[in-house]
Image (cartoon, rainbow, N blue to C red; front, side, top):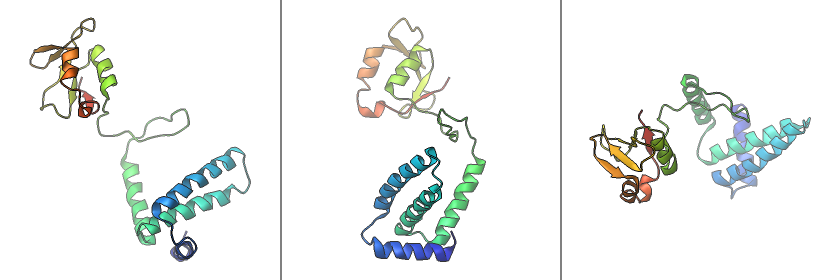
Length: 173
């Protein structure tokens, strides 16, 4: 899409769908994406028109959000450079390849309990630097802090019963 085409389509969308918002256009885009999926699965020879509908709505949402053609081109180039620098994983069962995050994977409470049973050391965003907890014996319901202090697993979780402790756990070893 070139800039005059972008401007013409944006102007037409504003006149025709004046009450639409970026979010309403994205909601409409979700519907159009499903139509595109159906066309791809059915090998519809006119599926290129569904691609066009998706582009109209995506660019229209960006325009409604205040982005110009140049803003979009700049954002595309910026994101392209970010993506080129990323590490990418393997395809999942649907063929989707996601980037590998530089951020450590965080665990929820149930995943943390399982990791502790597996003998892993864990830390939390509310822990001080160097602080961790582990379960030295998976047969016993006792956790141990980095300083050797032990506590029953029930008491450990009782002290951490508010929702802030339900997420943001990290395996450190």
